[in-house]
Image (cartoon, rainbow, N blue to C red; front, side):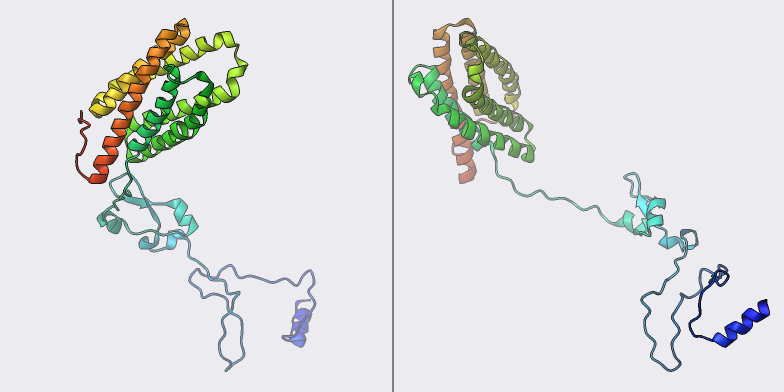
Length: 296
């Protein structure tokens, strides 16, 4: 039987032949790792062409030279150890001696303008307009003018100033501007969408306790402001007094206390305007034009 098959193969030569069950391709698995890749045969004397189907054989990781074994950095001392995951993926990295000698890159932050004048101005203007109504200097019929102002300027602009303070690394400014920006946004939303859901006889009491809660927050921010500037410190002292007076006036139903809180709010707004004016003017003129008294 083997002789008949060999004779048949000699007669067929290199031409096409049918494939049967016993006629299978045999792959020699004894080929060494370093043997050359398979190449397509070509006629003698013809120019050699590249074979796109050529399959290069890659040596396993264990047989690679030590310099080709991928490494990954470990603890901050710059040492490197072999990375088995990267080795399996075929990745490479610089040797330990090169990585240890290279200095670490230094990140330079872009120049960022001081957002404090914007936050103080947004706070001061909105507080001033609302305090005109709380003090009785303007009739309550015009109070809706505050709602859009509270949402856009006192709320959104001050909230953005708080986010930008995070970028500058100012924890105090970021906390203050973000919080009071959210206060003004919540105030506008309450007056426009939610106030009518609360019984009118109880609205003042609930609003009063909310203002007292904001007064507590302002009190501890006032304590922290002793490490900022004298101008900002005065603003927080007056603002805390404003919140306490307005809150107590609403909870007790004492109109005179609410009126006093409105007048103190006007003074608070003026102090905030001065702090904003001083900071933006000193930064623009690049010299101390208006004092703010650094407390740090």
